[in-house]
Each structure stands twice: as C-alpha cells, then as structure tokens.
Length: 354
Ligand SMILES: Nc1nc2c(ncn2[C@@H]2O[C@H](COP(=O)(O)OP(=O)(O)OP(=O)(O)O)[C@@H](O)[C@H]2O)c(=O)[nH]1
Image 1: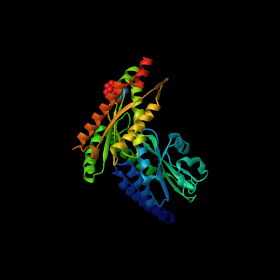
Image 2 (image 1 turned 90 degrees about the horizontal axis):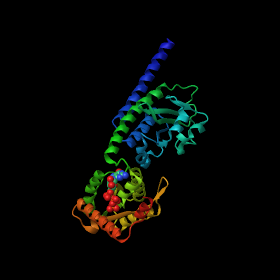
Image 3 (image 1 turned 120 degrees about the horizontal axis):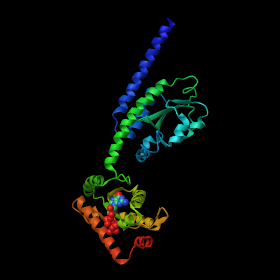
Image 4 (image 1 turned 120 degrees about the vertical axis):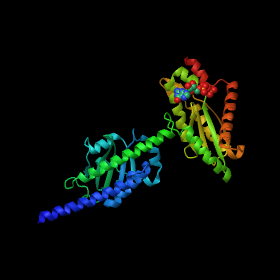
C-alpha cells in the first residue's frame, strides 16, 4: 500500500514538472531574438522552479560569436548571460553531455559564474547546451543552499530533459538571428550594409527635418586601395578594410552607426551631430590610420583615407538621397584635391616594394 502511494506521489510530481517544462517551452519557443530568449528563459525557470540564480553561458566563438555585441549591450542581461571559452566549459562538464552538480570546490567552476553571484552561491547545476550535437553553451541554476544541487543525493534526469528542450529552442532562435545578421551585415567587416544605411536614412531624415535636429552623413574612402590590392594581394586588401572598419566602429560607436557602403567606401551617420562635429570624428579616424600603419606579414602598410560629409540642417537637402549624393561629391572633391597636390605616403610605400 505504501509503495502504491509513493508511486502515485511520484507520478503526480512528474506531471507537475512536465507542466512546468511545457510552460517554459511555450514561453520561449516562438521568440525570434536571442536577448529576449535568454531573458524570458532565465526568468521563467526562476519562477517555475523557484531557483534564485539562473544564467546562460554562451560560447564566445563561432557559431554564436555574432551575438556578443547585442547581448553584452542589453542591461537586463548583465547577470544572466556570460560569454565563455569552450575549454572553460569543458573543464566543468568534462567530455560528457550530462548535467553536472557542484556543491563543493566551487572554485573549479568560478569562471562560469557571473561575478555578482560568485560569493553567494553554494551549489550549482550546470547543463550543457548543444546545437547539432556541438557544445555551444551551459545552462546554469544555482542556490545559496549547498544541499540543493548535491551530486551525492540528487538525480539529474529532469535537468537533462530541460537542457534538451532549451537546446532545441536555442537552435531555432540562433538560426533566425543568423539569417537576420546575414541579411543586414557586410560579411567581411561585420558592419551594417548599404541597404540598412538607406533604411535608416529614410527613417531618420524625416525625423530630423520635423524636429529640426541635425543629422550628418560622412563618406570615408581608402586612398589607393586598388594599388594595395594589386601590389600586396587581395588578402591584404581585405585586412585593410577590416582594419578601417574596426577603427570606424570604435570612433562612431556611441555617437552613431557605421556602414560599409561598397568596396573601399564606408559611411557613418551621426544623428544629432552637426557637420563640424561629425567631421571631427572623421579627422580622428584619418589621423589614427595615418599614424598607425597596418602590420601585414613583414610590411607596415600605410593607410590614408579621404572623407566628405553633408548634413540635414546645414545643407538643407530635400531627401536622403540628395544628402548622400552631396556627401559623396564632397568626398571626391577632397580626394581629387589631395591627389593633385602630393603623392600619398601609400603610393611611395607601394612603389618602394614593387
Ligand atoms: N580586397 C578587396 N578588394 C575589394 C573588395 N571590394 C572591392 N574591392 C576592390 O576595391 C578596388 C576599388 O578601387 P577604386 O575604387 O579605384 O579605389 P582606389 O584604388 O582607392 O582609388 P581612389 O579611391 O581614387 O584612391 C577595386 O579594385 C575592387 O576590386 C573587397 O571586399 N576586398
């Protein structure tokens, strides 16, 4: 009799857990963005199972590295997502694909615990997350009670089931994000592509006019880029483009958006900045590149850029296409004036190594 009651109790408990799993899955299944996915998942597990600390470790290499920028910028996720190297994850879960419970020697998994929880948690359940059989992350639940995730007394079957469900949903959401990333970014530099520039300008142009708030567009073009390609090879040309893109992102990051327009032409847009303010940014990029040549194999390749801008308030164009056209014309005037005056450092360098 006692056994039957126990059995019935077990069935009821399993049913309750299955319902909670269903509820979690229902909440995360149709989410299309990774930031919302991590936020909803961690909050829902906290709520359904009354777990005080829940977070996700994601691998900081392919196939998820493109998510780092967005997820790290989301304030709500500061303690809910960590980017971690694969070997650090393997050190914790070893080569198995099962949940690991740790409640003594937490130092062994310190790196996978968000810094704010490190001195609070006393037991952790670490479940591997996989996409197509490859380890891509860890789903972690923790408590200040050291007996909650005790390897000696607790079973991990249900935690493994939960991790399998999360892995399937993660695979869906990352596939959707990857598609969106590929459709909006330039594959070489990772900058937003020309289509995104036009969409953004179409939107921001009318807002800027309505609010009489300036909006400046600046073109940046690498000098003698074809000669760099021809002399040092296409790979070197690619590295030059990546180097410029990185610097562009660094200088424009908090003040606007950077785009690859075409070939060796880049554009940045600074909402709220005047023409003069935006040109100061362009000058900083120019000056940095001029004094920091790119190291390519045994060469130090000098890089110079030309630039030209236009602004909504200052130049009063009637639409965003005119704004772009004006900025492009100023870039070419700038470039042609420089070409006529002095041969650039780049040409001298290339002539020397030819
Ligand atoms: N390596 C590399 N080259 C590219 C890429 N896209 C376009 N190009 C090359 O970029 C070159 C652009 O040449 P131009 O527009 O004449 O530029 P430039 O030599 O800098 O000339 P100026 O702008 O007048 O100084 C072309 O030779 C293209 O083949 C790319 O993704 N990678």
